[in-house]
Image (cartoon, rainbow, N blue to C red; front, top):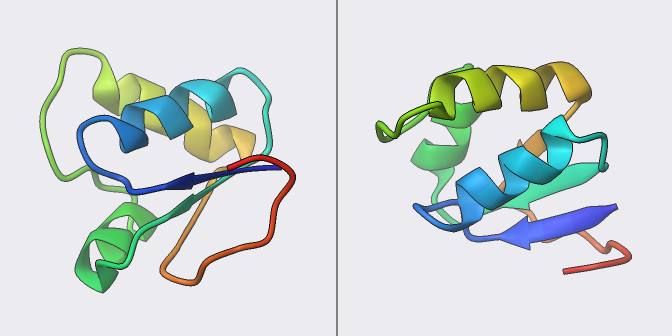
Length: 74
């Protein structure tokens, strides 16, 4: 499992790309509002292809949390 810490313009697409390719990913951010929005199935900014990538990552099982997770890779 990989923990991507920080789900902004760099971290979120990175986490989504890995998850959509079958890597077990958990995205962590201290911003509860951001994490809640992601857990509701919505992204927080627009970027070409981001919605499709988000949907693929959700189907693959990506998780979002405000609590730091112990994982194999950070």
